[in-house]
Image 1 (cartoon, rainbow, N blue to C red):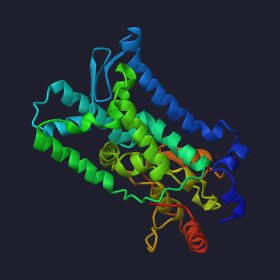
Image 2: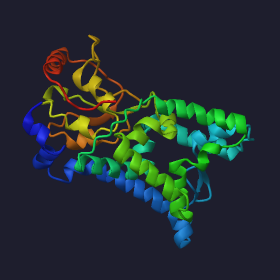
Image 3: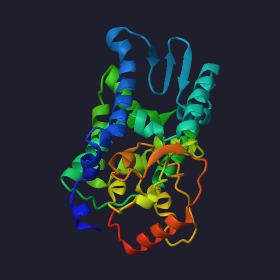
Image 4: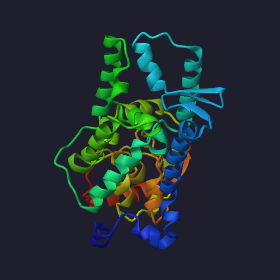
Length: 315
């Protein structure tokens, strides 16, 4: 890797070329989305303005439109609960939204815990903390299965009692209590134990939404991948580093299969950080369709991949 690239902060070149605002526009948009959603829920309890009632698990917009977390509904189904029609309708509305935009958009644009884990990762990078623990990204799917089995065996939604997402959201509205301990534990886990330990390796909520958005239409594309200069900034900031390489380099590791420029993995959170930090404007939001391969640029990228060692931790 180029030593100049290795020494500087990810996105420094993009800031120099595009300006700070343009090099952070999707990060700022995500923070605006997360905080605005929290504010909408808090307007009622705090100020008596009830635009939306409830929480991220179940809510009602303007006393009319129901919204239900489909993961909560699935746990209720496994627990043997009788499902009300409004809950089913609300889950269908939410599911349709995330099937279209990508399930893990929930993780990067809605979930308040993402702010906590992003802060932990920023501190981890700033102080150059490297954790010794290596976690499998498939662990989150095993935990997801365990939460459903727990609901089936106990007849209750036991996971929601300790779910950091639900606890933080309820705590911000009604008082934190035990939520402080859970959220602080997640923060320390990400800061000291392993990179992106919670969101990218353990969280069953993210696992569920990744399955929900398996075939979503809105994806990040690397159509200008022939402009890539191997600075590795996109890998450094990506919470799911393994999703970038196939689309950016044109093939999977140890494979000759040619792959188009669309990041098709459902584990991509569509956070847009790769777009922000890329000075070459390799990435952009687009559609899953027209995932064609430019054979000339693909050969160029394959040669570059064999000649460079990224040195980036990809778990």
